[in-house]
Amino acid sequence: MQQVVDTATLLLDERPAVLLAAVLALLAVLWSASWRWTRTVVTIAHEGGHALVAVLAGRGLTGIRLHADTSGLTVSTGARRGPGLVFTFLGGYPAPSLLGLGGAALVAADRAALMLWIAIALLVATLVHVRNIYGGFAVLATGALVGAVAWWGEPRLQEGFAAALCWFLLFGGVRAVRELQRSRRYAGASDADMLAGLTRVPRGMWVLLFGLLAAAAAIVAAWVLLFT
Image (cartoon, rainbow, N blue to C red; front, side, top):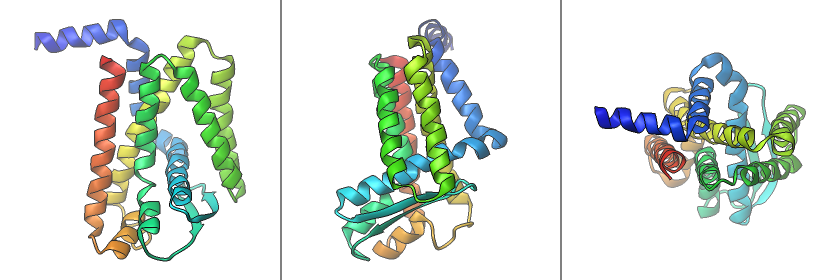
């Protein structure tokens, strides 16, 4: 017990901004009122993951749509079956967690500003492919906030904001998978359902895989941010 207390005290002394960022991000994800407003950031990362994998798999990217109910849709062209389409559907749910993990590595290396500018570049690349008004507004608003911190923020603010964004993507990635597991809102049309239809691997196995990836990314990122 004393060792736990000593470790917590040490972290409070050495990483106060990172710990505060974690608390704020966790509250934003757990509090339903804030989650309804901020979940779109996770959706942007999710649909961006689909889009990136589709392009890497050689599929044509038609566009991305983001909706006010925090759902999204990425449309690609190409074969209706095969590994390219499987990987495209697979790329959505892990994307927020992997982005959070990559960002955490940069924050831990004292490259918070670089992490923010990379986030802006990814948002710009996403905006080019957005095909609806709400989606464009959501991406622009997110980019404006990140850009303001990257351009005008002091180093300490940049570090705290970058850490909070990483934590939010990590925690949000876990909650998004939990919602997928619990909800039948998109029964038959979710990524897990599509993957089940393409591969004959049960829907539940895909949800379990998404959950394991999200949890692993959060654990590794927490270690990187707090102990390296």
